[in-house]
Image 1 (cartoon, rainbow, N blue to C red):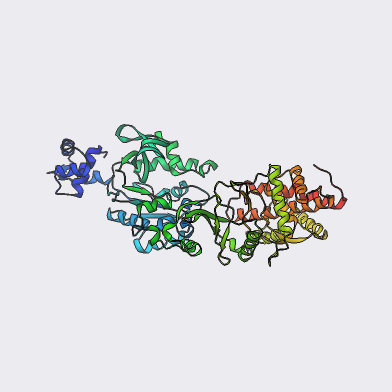
Image 2: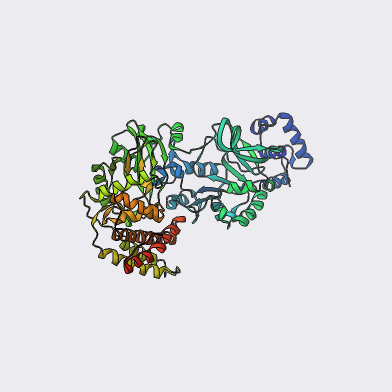
Length: 594
C-alpha cells in the first residue's frame, strides 16, 4: 500500500512511540498540527489506525517502508587525503575520539539496522576486524583502483532494496538513520555563496530534477543516500546496461543516476548546516577537530617531525601531488617553508635500490644539481625534499632548455662520482621478462623477435667500449624542474647507477618522445659539437634498448593489473623503430637521417 508523505510520517511516529501526542508528532516530523490532524483522519478512514494506534493493517502498510540494510562504501584510495591515506584508509581515521566508520556503524545499529555490508578495496585487510566487532559483512571490490565507485555498487547490486548507501568517511553530528523511510532520497545541505559541490534543483515533493557541478546559494549533495525498492529495481538494470562500456569505468554511481534522472525518482532530504561532514583535506578535519594531528597515530607525520624538528601542530597545507608510476607524493608546509614527502609505491622495494638512491641524492646535492634533497630513509624508501613553488618542467621542444639538460648530463657523467649499484637496460629488461613469465607464456605477437634483436643490439653496444659512469636513468623532462628564478634541478634519482653513458640519452629520447631530428640536436648539445657516426650509432642503440626495457616493464605492470596507458605503446614504438635500424647501422657501418 502506498502512503502519502504526511500519512507515512504520522503512522511511523505512532508505531515507534505509542504514547505520542499530535503535538509530539508535529515536533518530531515538522508537520503542522493541522497536517497531523488531517493525516490522523486519513489513516483512520483507511483503517490504518484504531483508537489512535496503528492497526495490524497499518503496521503491514508500514512494513514496506522498513529499511532492510545498509551499504558502506570503503574501497576508495582517498588520494586527496595523502599522506595519511598512504598508511590507512580514510574511514579508519579517529576524529573527535571516534573512528569514522565505527561511529557510522554504531549509528546504524542504534537505528535498528543490523544488516550492514562494507565494500572494501584499498588496504582492505584493515577493515576485516569489523566483522568480529560489529557483525558486518565484508565484500571486496577487485576493481577499486581501475574503476570509480559504480564498481562498488555493482559488487553488491543483488543486495539493493530498501537500502542506505553511505561513505565510510562521513561524520554525522546527529544520527540520520531511521527504521522506516518514505522514499529514495539524497541528503543535501545549503551552501551560501559559491560552491564546487553538486547542486540540486527540485520539483514537486522535493523530487531532484537536475544537478549541476558547482553553483551558488544552493542545496548540494552530501552524506548518506537512501534507495527505496522502486529506485533499486530501476537503477540496477540501468547500471548493468552500461557497466561494460569503457566510458563507465571513471563514473561515479551518481553519474549513472544523473544520466537517467527522468526515470529515477529520488527526493532531496534537507539537513541543517553542520549536520553532515565530508572531509576533503587534512585542514578541513583540523578545523572540525583541532586536536586531530596531535592524536594521530601516523608514522609519516612522526617522520616529518623527526627530520625537520617541527611540531605536529605546525604541519599544514597538505595535499597530494601528481603521482608517478612508482611512488606517491604530497605537499606539506611548516613554519620553515614548503616540502614534499615521497612515499614509496607498492612493489618498489623489489625494483629500486634505496641505498643507492640515497647515495646518488647526496652526490646530486654536492654537484649542485638537486639541492631540494633533505633526507631519505634508505631502508624504507620515504624521502623529504624542499618544495619548489611555481616550478615548471623542462620543455623538450625548447632548444635552449634541451641544451641545459644535456649540459647537466655531461656534468654528471664527468663527475667521477661512483655508486656501488649498476644499471643496464638489457639486464633490467630480461629481469622484467622473468617476472612476465610468472604470469604465463609470453604470447604477445612479435615479442620473441624483438627480444632477440635487443640481445644483438646489446652485444654491438658493449663492443663499442663506451665509458661507464654515474647515470640518472630516469633522465627526462618531468624530472627537470625550473624555479621562478630559472634555476634548474634534476630530481628523482631512484634508478641511478653506474652504466653506459648513453643510458641517459636513451631515456631522454624515448620519454620525451623525440623525433630523430630532435634527438640528434640533443646529442649535439651533449657533445657540444656534431657527433661522429659511431657516437650516433651507439647512443641510438640505447634509445632502442630503453624502449625495449620499458616496454617489457609495461607488459609486467599490465599483467599485474596496473594500467600503464599510452606509455606501453610509446615504449614499444621506439623499440620497434630503432632495434632493427641500429643493427643495420652496425652491420653496414653507415648512417643516414630518417
